[in-house]
Structure formats: C-alpha cells, structure tokens
Length: 339
Image (cartoon, rainbow, N blue to C red):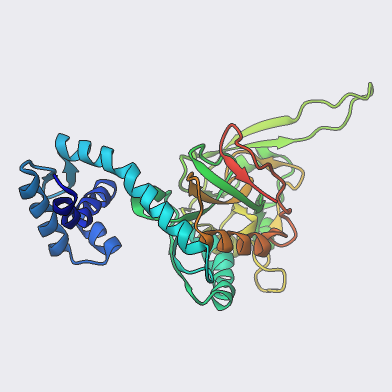
C-alpha cells in the first residue's frame, strides 16, 4: 500500500490502538472526542479496507481478533513515538499547555489535592486538568491517565514515581468512646473493643503492631516487638473520611492516614491517639507519590504540575509527614525521582 493510500487510514488505525487499550467504544469515543457511532463506523470501514475482521464485538465486551491484535502490536510503538516527538517539539517553545488527566484517592484528593489544583491553574492558565477521585487502582495507560497520586510503600516498577512526602497511619478514637470503654494499654486489649476497619487493598480483619524496644544492657538494640491482633467491630468502610466521621461519632477505635485527621483548629472534631508507642504495619503506605507509566520523556505540563505538588506537599500533613528524600536512579521497585 502506498503512502497516499495509507494516509486516510492513519486516524482510524490510531483509533484501533486506543480501542485495544480501553476495550470500550464508549471510552474510546470519549477519549478521542468523537461519537460512539462514529468510532464504531470507522472501525467497520477499517475492517472493510483491510479485508479482515479486527474487532470482536459482544453485548458485554469488545476485544481484538488475532489480526487486530497483531496490527496493534506493530503500530503502538510508532504512535507512542509520534506522540512523544510532538509533545517534545511543542514544549520547546511557549508556556506549558495541554490537558493533564489525574486520578487520586477520594479523601486525599478532596482534602489536599483539590486546593493545590486551584492555585496551579491560576499560575498556568493554558493547562487544563481532569481530576478523577476514586479509591480503586486504575490502569493509567489503559484508561488514559497522565498521572496518579497514591499513598504506597512500593511504587510499581513499570512507573516513574515522584516522592511527594511521607505519611503515616494513626490509631484514633474519640474521648467519649475511651471514657465509656477504657483506654487500651496494649494491642491485645483491642480484642475487647469495637474497631472500625478500612475496606480495600486486600486488608483482612487483623492489625499487626510493631514497637521499637529499648537498648539492652550490652548496648545492643533489641529487635522490634511485633503483635498481631484480630479485630472486631460494627462498621467498615472503604473511605478514610467516612471512617473519621464514624470515629468522631464515638463508634470505636480506627486507623486513619494522617492526611484524614481532623484539623487541630476544629475544636468540635477531636480525636485522641490510641497506643501511641505502637505502629500498625503495612496498611495505608509510607509515602505519597505521583506516578506515571515510564516513558523517555515527560510532557512539560506534567513536569510543572508535579513540581507544584512537591512544593505543596513538602511538609506533609499536620506536622506528621516529612519532606521526601530519595534517589534519581532506578531502584528495585520504581524509577523514583526527588530533588
């Protein structure tokens, strides 16, 4: 096929690669700014031109045939290079511009990310942001997101990870609840308390606590003491803001990420830390990261937004987080970027 014959098909071939990642005509049409009917018609025309079926349609899903998948495998790298080359050339001149699609957890996004976005957009009026708040872990590449804000201890090895700040989990309860039920002195005491559980991330109905023990007489540090506790309670939720409100209502003892703690200035929203000498292990993650699938180049608009987030999150939350420290080379888990 000559270049003259191929040229009219390029847009439809690109549409096929987007459909391969979204597996949805509706999402493909939304991402490309066309109607669902138009997207379906263009794929049908591409199939007629190729003389072979490329897409397998059912009432519940959309998939590719063997021929369609082979075509996408061959074309995807070329379209990615074209996109990177275009973005790089555009970034050489003028102010940062373009659309950034961002996903973040609901509580973190509402309480801390949204205020950052407003200040950023005033500073960079030619950049547009779409912010989707969800507590599920989205596939950035397949769903067309440029950036994810997540709290985790192990960023995925296939992503670039910008460390924004440290975060920690805190066991909290209301003074009224502790007055009624007593103050736990040891993690094992929690078995006789109502505990509020976070749903999600495969967490089970148990908490593992660790406490650093004092130095021995010989001057050598003893190993951290660890205790596992089975938890029972009357309420569970997959959102830390909801858990916070349940704790404020006196329903029990629960674990919150520090970014969801009530602001100290709100006198009516008071919670007390429980078992301050103990730390629950492996729950909400130890750092806040901005994540992006690895690529040789990062759009200038995304770079500007990440730098803005790093400045905004630098002090952590309520004095509990710390400015991040990291490396610039690939680690065992991810390419982590810090100053």
